[in-house]
Length: 583
Image 1 (cartoon, helix red, strand yellow):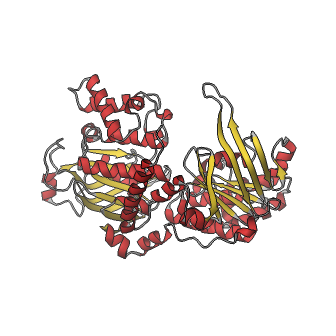
Image 2: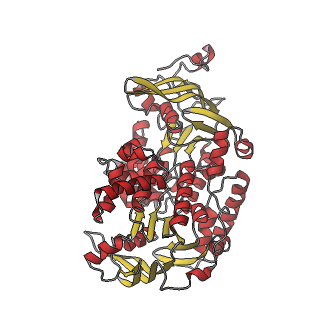
């Protein structure tokens, strides 16, 4: 419904009284939002999710809306499209090329979506229908909004759109199902569907959060080129300030549903006024912030390593129609007690496979691997249980790794009970662990859904440290967290690691995080370790072309520096392409 808020003058009402007219030339903002309020009926009262949101978005411009989870950035944008659940209430005004969207009947709003305003969602695997091909889904969008178009014309246009978003093989992608494409290709397919009707406004909701750094750079470059070609205005919803620096013209910062700061990108990055914006900027990890690496002499002895891999190969057996394949080849690593090794690379490089092999979930086919002094080749079930008591693992998504039916205190204490500890000893240790991860002791009686993402991850860390492990495997433990929450969790993990002096394998694709935490870094590509060494060697003076591409793709929270890095990356890619051997 529409209410007369602060921005609802009689002139605005008259301007928005007509419906949206596709293709009409409109001299003014592509989207004008005034005094937008969103509330949800929770329990027995209305709870505010977004309050008095106002902005004007001109054609061809990018507005970045930033803030932590629950700040209202996605809610306010989805309200404009009418995509909120039934327990919501929206008031205020949102004019799309002069036509009011708030209060527009659903049947009319459906005609506006896609042609007037479209969305790119965070996770394409859940947004795309898994039982239909990519081509069918794009074609259906075209046929629904273009009644005179034939299926042959829709197919031709869909393949053209897939080429526009730089899909490697548009015709093959047209006939593929979502699960047959990589994460970056699925995101390209979703972008193709979103731009199929040349929308005036494109809402990109965390479009690169789940992507590797090089794929992220490609998607950002694609979005930048597309919005220049199509002259579409873009609302970029993100918590990654490096992405903001790379894309945005203006920035709006939200906290707890309120807009706390709004201005041009140079103003926000160069002189943020609000304490929350300043804190957000200070929390962003970026390359160059890490401390110097300790002397390499401490890692020279193989016998003292807490984790030792020598020429390890790992195979996945044939399953159904999926043939057997070698996921890791010739991997050699060693980590001393008290040391952190960052294992980086893109999805499919073999990082998680190595992590799974270390904890005994995947057998190794060749080579040698010792974990906490135990040889893992040919290990029996009893030996495996013994070595797992010396291991801890922190998973990427604590929400799915904690039992939703158990209070978190039981989840933390489960490893202790399995190790034969008594109830009284387990209870005391659970309290100690909650203190260690800086959570209130009464949290032991809460369930996972009652905690925030950062709090759940602290519980995951507490559980991993329950048995005082000699080796900790952390598999992308902060990738799903907001930047400020990520900073606090990383600081906590860093402090605990220094105190307890366990060896840590930190698996990630975020090089800035590795710069903060790691003593040494190993880089993986296509199942092989292509380069490893100290932080200074890998991050400041990389030798391998793949490592150079990874570093060039990392966005930094500085618009001027990001422009320079973008130009340098283009030059590097052109140079490497020039010397690439002919296939």
